[in-house]
Amino acid sequence: MPAPEIAPHSQDNGKTLGHVNLMVDTLIANATIDEQVLRAITRSLLATGTPSLAASFTAAARSRLRQTVAKRIATTNGLFATGLDGIYAVPTPELENVLARARSLYGAGMGFTSLALLSSVVKSTVGLRWEQDGLMADTLAVIDADISQAIQSCKEELEGGRVNDLSAARETISKMWAGVEESSRDVDVWGGEFPFDRAANSIECWRI
Image (tube, rainbow, N blue to C red; front, top):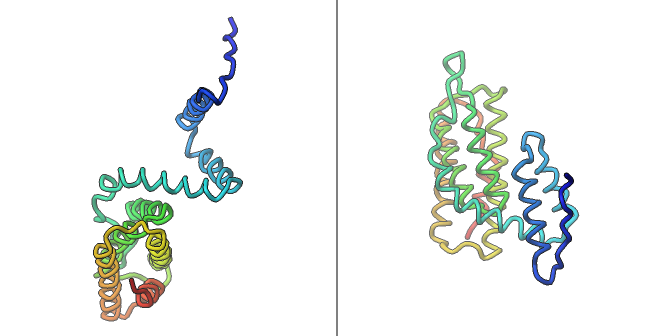
């Protein structure tokens, strides 16, 4: 027996919006992220929507991330391991997980939270050795770029009036600067190439 047709409700009583939300929720619940369905839909929606839509999207993302950030960012241990040669460091899968969280944070406009996480990553590189050309060097260059992006997100967070505690914000910057300087000194000891030039320049020229 065919299912009965359900007549659409008018928007005046709010039923249409509720019905549509139920259908959209069904799509979200059943779409496969591995197929990048939701990512493609989201990008298309934001690209064709108004600027206010993108602002609402990032506001919703920040709200959700604030609820989960304390649980998800528990540790930055195990980001690097010693390679098969027993000398040089290599990145681990856990590093990619941490960097993905950091990117989600600064992409949503939570620059200072992201910067705090990235400063822990920088600190984790102190005492390590790596080849000048190779996976580790490439990874550190990516992290350097991530720090610069996080700093830009911090500036936008400040300009947007979303920073309630300037002292905490300054402390976050100070910790990143301290980590970058410690990395520079450590690399000098073993004659390596300092990997965080962009980050150092971005922080040095920034005052809040």
